Image (cartoon, rainbow, N blue to C red):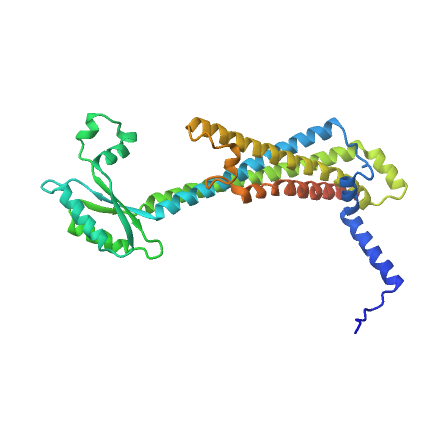
Length: 336
């Protein structure tokens, strides 16, 4: 059985087309499409010194925005890696005590740890390994060797079923003289607070860049309207509406925002890869690593972070379109 569809009259089709044309005119969609396809020109000259200067300035803002986003992603991923590693391990510290054998202390601590549920494995650091941990702060030599250096036991915990740290700490301190449990929670909290502050700073930089870009577009739009006042007056005389003039102006700024955003992403990624190559060479890591390694390495921004950088040209286009349109319409209405 054939489905019956409602008949559409010629009047309804014409009314729908009229509404669509009105919608396109109100937001300047036709002008934006024309700017992309280059079907017609804009009332603003496409190649001027001021236009090129504006593109350079907005490109610089987009470049700084890309760097701020990359820094934000790197901070987040680095902190996530550090804290996840810290959360997997705790440390038992055994201080030398007069009259107590260090070997006996280590044996008793090992017995307590092995009998505690939630502990996956333990690893006793040798005295030489403990000394190497102190060398960056105290230096090497015979002085460090003569100091009563505590012995450390690295404990890997079961993340799915972690032990009761409070109970474990009480057992160690009461049964073994000089023993203490370090869960690294204080150090982890300091890292998280520092990372949060740095991320807030990067977000603040992004906000300042956005505000600065909006101010630049506003001044550029006012200057463009003032320099082309005669052309706009002629367009009004021949019957051009304010929406048409606003669409023509915003189509020009649409292209500026798109080009600037893409330039910012390209140069931002080149800077990121170049710094990655330089750091790889400086740190003396394997020569097989290349700049593209930083696109998918666990400590890099990753592929999704790379794709997220393209929010910059999208945001630049939106800022340019909305800012220029609002300024043009308010100037034409006599508010500005």
